[in-house]
Amino acid sequence: MTPAITLLKKKRLHHEVLKYEHDSNAPSFGLEAVEKLGLAAECVFKTLVVSTEREELAVVVVPVATKLSEKKVAKALGAKKVSMAKAEAVVASTGYILGGVSPIAQKKRLSTLIDTSAKQFATVYVSAGKRGLEVALSPSDLAELTQGKFADVSV
Image (tube, rainbow, N blue to C red):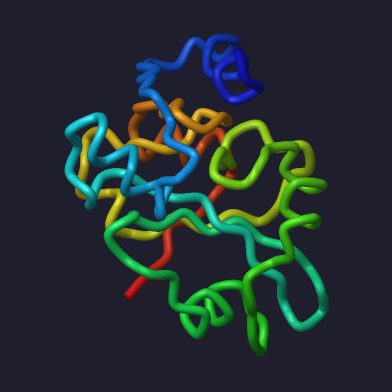
């Protein structure tokens, strides 16, 4: 059990854990989940960590079918610019390995942005904290658990 699943159970929030056999050669972990679970790419979200010019980290949750817009993320965070965080910083701040980073129950609480497109779905899918493990939950529960805010952050 991962910290994300433990927290969902503790809070008694409606969720579903989905497992699939992870292929370490998959070019995209998010698209692998879409393919193996038979889900729409628009409702499966990847968890990315960015760093601001002040070296402050933030979490950004965007659909796997899109790309993160650094310009939009910077604006939403009130920063001049952002870039993808270094792998070591991601692991140290989230407690999760790359490809298995969940936005839920991270080691350190970081500012979290969730792409506004999530609000159009009753259920969204995010990593449950391990490669080959996804969790389905409502966008509002995701925002509550992460103390995240919705923002237009993808292209």
